[in-house]
Amino acid sequence: MKRYLAATTLVLGLLVAGSASASNINVIGSVSTWAEEGNRDQRVDDKVFTFIDRSSNWTDFNNLDLVTLTAVPELNTANLTVTLLTEAVGGGPYWLNYSVEIDAGNGLYFGGSRLDSSVFVPPTVVTKTIYGSLADLQNHLSPLLTLTSLNGDPDPEFPPLYLDLPHLKKVWVEDTVTLVDETSILSTFDNTFFQTPVPEIDPTSFGSAFALLMGSLSLVERRARRVRSFLTAA
Image (cartoon, rainbow, N blue to C red; front, side, top):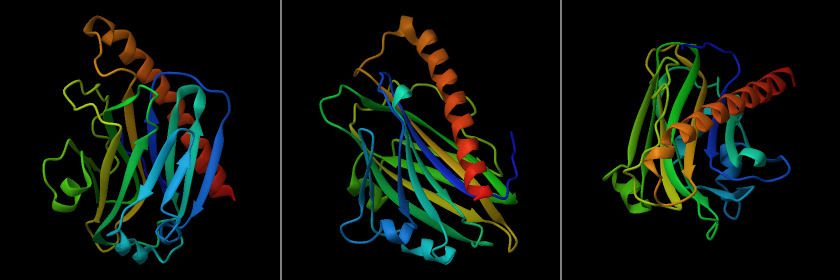
């Protein structure tokens, strides 16, 4: 489904099984603020998001972007939201590199991902590539997953649980934005990272797990819309 919005938001969610009690928010500031020495490790709930060097070409957005981490503990989700990127008109590729790590000892593992985007002026291309190590990211070797969203179409529309992935507590991500025409403007792109509570999933429970995943995704998307509406009105 294509969506064309004036607000610019990047949402990265971590969806896992389990429960917690209260919501929380961590407003980092601009990507350039996140990139400052001593400020690169940012926590929300039991996840740490770490800025990785080589994202400096994000400065074409004139540092007007706003990075916010939001946790939805009852679903064990965490969103990385970047707004106000409409200063980038045409050009690219622009990239943003970061890692996402789950606290050790909680029995949760990386289990898959989804990429979605919205645009203000098409055409746009957003690609997310996920790696199992920093060296693989830096050398663009052996990606675990590569997803592409064209002009607001999500990839995949209904994400499966990736049962063949290695059981990792940490992944390294490169998001790449290409604004194809001189007038192209990206409005939103959303990253969702799914977690599995144990290293292996019983195939007989896949149906119920998938239904829970889709219901949780719907709730996360509604929350993301409320965040975008709030930031647009502010």
